[in-house]
Image (cartoon, rainbow, N blue to C red; front, top):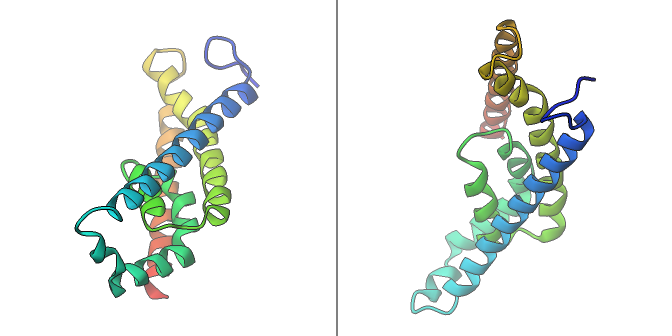
Length: 154
C-alpha cells in the first residue's frame, strides 16, 4: 500500500491515529467522572440521587457501549458521548472495549478516506477519489440512521 503522511506506512498512521483517539476518548471519560465527583460535593448534590438520574445510569450501562463505539463515526457528538459516559458512571470494564473499538474505526476511516480528502485538497490525488470518499460518508450515515431507528424501536 502507498505510503501516507510524508512517507509513513499505512499501519503506522493507523496505530498513531488509534492511540490518539483512544487516549482522547478515555481522557474525556475521566473528565466526565471528575465532573460527577465534583458535583457530588456541591449544594446541588441531592439532585444526583433523583430517580431520573438512576434510570439514566441504568440506561447508559445497558446501551452506552454501542453509543460510545458509534460515536467515533459522528462529528460533534463523540466528546459529549464519552463525557456523559463518565458523568453517568458507565463501568470502565464496559467503556474501555467500546472506546478501543470506536477509536480503531475512527483511525481506519481517517487513515483511508480522511487522508484521501487531504491528498485531494493538496492536489495529489485524482478528483474521483472525492467520489469514493463521498460514497463512504453516505454509507456511514445510512448505517448510523439504521442503527438509530433500530434502537428507537426497542
